[in-house]
Image (cartoon, rainbow, N blue to C red; front, side, top):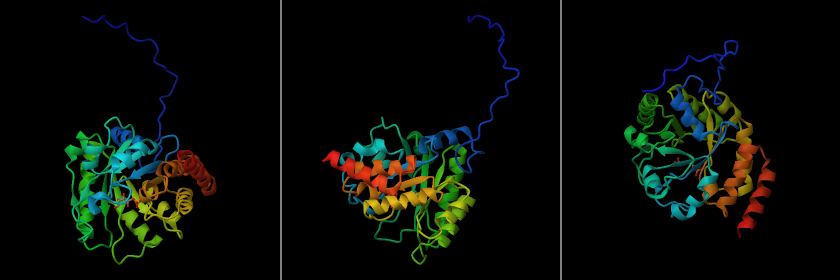
Length: 292
Ligand code: R5P
């Protein structure tokens, strides 16, 4: 039988309990589990994240740079705060000892041979819980042919995520006839946030990105887009961060770089240490040469 407790003496009567806020925009009212999962994606010290996006195979098969994720990605995965990927790659290829966050691709259906906006929810919430994921990602095609269906995928996932404490990342996908400008992304990002997305991924636009970030009440992460020269990608990252992005969810500009390990470290330096694009590029060159 345990000893009877002698009642405590130190109640800290005159010390008010700290009421901590939360470091992410729009997340103060979320529950503990949701905030804890967010803290595995975003670094609480900087409030930012480097997500490494490697989910491209879910609609386009073995993308250049992702032919062998065990060889090309696993060795650099520890430089990312979070991996964004499918459950197939997670189970088959990512060591369960991986310490970073996992953002699981939760929508899919059509391949590049068909209409891409015709997606459905592609993961059961129970499987997401079983995989201990930090968030679920769903593509939203504002202006696309199956706009309403993709929005409905988002809202259903938000209901499931709220039930179990799993943040939902809405990924804005550009519809065929929509221009990729600030006006479009303000519309798309705001719709996603209004409908409950806990954070939103969008593309950088040189003219007006700050208005996209300002009008979205939840954190924005910037998608990398197609491969561009390393210095250009670092400039884009720097500008997005300075204009209000809370990080990047970057794929091809890292894994299709001539040195993915050097590039992800350079991107990290911009995101978490505010290095200028030129400083980060010099770091990239230095790390690239160390490797070879
Ligand atoms: C594409 O549909 C995927 O969601 C990618 O994760 C996303 O496009 C980011 O990758 P990238 O930086 O290559 O554009």
